[in-house]
Structures are given as C-alpha cells and as structure tokens.
Amino acid sequence: MTTRTTASAKPELWGLLDAIVEQLPPTKSKLEALLNVSFERRIDRNKTTYFVCERVPPGSFGVTISTMSFHEPAGEHRGDLMMELTGADVGGDAIAARFPGGHWVPPPPPGWGGDDAGPAYLVDRPWGQLAFALAPGADATIRRVSFAPGLRGSPGI
Image (cartoon, rainbow, N blue to C red; front, side, top):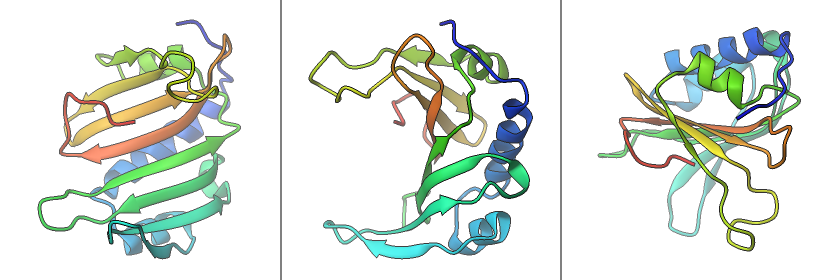
C-alpha cells in the first residue's frame, strides 16, 4: 500500500500511541491525567458504561483527536479504547514500518461499510491488539486507532 506521510506528524503520533499504551488498561483517571481533559461517563443501550471526550486538544503530542472513547476493565472485559484522528497525515506504509508483522484488511465491498470505509491494519502487540483504520482512496491516511488489551488475532476495528 503506497500512501503519503508527513514526516513531522509521525513522532508526535507515535509518542501519543506509546503514551496511551503505558496507560493500558484504560481508566478515566489515567487518561484524563495523560491528556489533560475530562471524560464524560455515558451508558449505552446495553447498559454498558463507557467514557467519551470530544475534541481533545493537540496538547504536547501535536495530534488532534476528534473523539476518544473507552471502556474501563470490568469483570473479564479488559477494557478497550478508540480514537478518531484529524490531520495526522500518516499513511499505511508508515504504520506498517512502525508496527511490522501485522496484516491488512481490505475495505468492505461498496454498500457494506459505508462510502467512507477504507482499509485497516491490525497488529498483535505484547499487551493485545492495535488496529488502524485508514480513510478510503489512493492517499489513505490514518483516521482511527483502537487498542484492545488482551485481544489477539481477530479484527479490532
């Protein structure tokens, strides 16, 4: 997969991802301290509690997070975290180079995943699975990152 990459965006993005990994499993207090934001507690229709923060400022990592949501560990669930990025301008080649050994998942067929679905890159890490969703198109750049502690070998996005 050939995509563009802005060199200046990579160190900040990788720093952000490394810092989040240090906070796994995710908890409200750890992530609020790391990002200097407040998360709102919500309950979904299945009565599952999760936390959301919209429009996380770039802060010291220089990466704009439009939305971050996560579940804290509960029972056998190890927690998970997903963030939507804007302006990271990091493509598939840079992701695969930084996190070798993963595999690409092609975008869904037209009509199955929405018109804005692009490819995904999944990689197992010592702590669990890291998944990247890219925007569709020839210049696909990172759009979403998810962390799934304890999960290995199955799709995370």
